[in-house]
Length: 133
Image 1 (cartoon, rainbow, N blue to C red):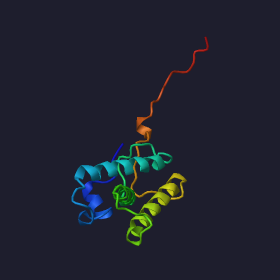
Image 2: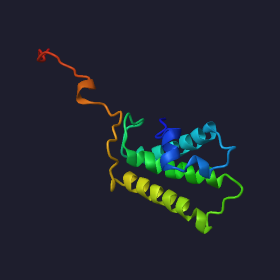
Image 3: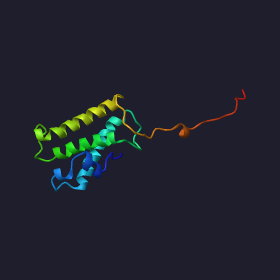
Image 4: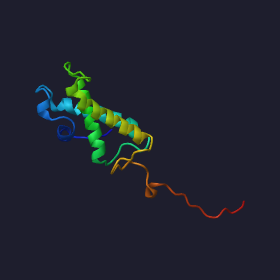
């Protein structure tokens, strides 16, 4: 399983570090990114041979949106209905809807390269003409 975002990408596309409590470590962020990447794979696996070897910013942003929501939701002070948290909730919901569209083959991630066998990696069998014995 690949993590579709780094912590640096999470800080840009997920939630800014200054918006999080100082007790949130890099390891915490990595754990939520990994969990969100696993969730992404559950959708991507219906259209791609996993793991992906390359992907675009669309997958990274969607994973960061899910990871940011889940990280903040894990804090006891989070209330998803509160207006100040609406942005996180809306971004997470949009990311999940997009992954659902990918799974239904209605949306197509940019630059996604999977590990499907290529024509050059397929085995070939050659034999002589049957002798008829």
